[in-house]
Image (cartoon, rainbow, N blue to C red):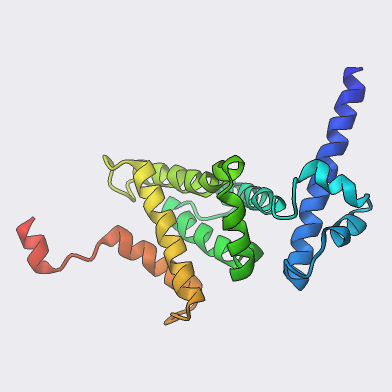
Length: 202
């Protein structure tokens, strides 16, 4: 009986993962609004109604996509995968990778944020922050970021910095390529903006 249940659960997980992969591919290719649920389920080889066994609405798949993509990000950005050993370098790379993800398309991002505001999806918004907080802690241990400052506070600040730059980019402020802007923002945040007069006072 347990073996049957296990197989059934594995089948459900595989179907859910297939829906996520197909939906993301279609959203990337033709846009969110132009992709009906029926097209997703046809490509997945399941009945349309089955989609709603996994996601209450079409919008509900977006937070699941965000969580899945961020989990992939966390797995990819490890020293074991030949990524930068520097935690600060990994923070910069993470920001750039998230910025390049299809989910940051302006229309799709707007839909995602709306879905995340729903009570049951609020925790999804913390996944990216948790990744950044962990990298800040590692950077503090490596001496790249000053110890004694709350890592969660710094992670949340970098998270806010990222979204502010994405907003500026969408609004047309593009003095440099987006990856360059994000890397410069992290450097500016870590180095500070104090001039000699301010530093003399402190």
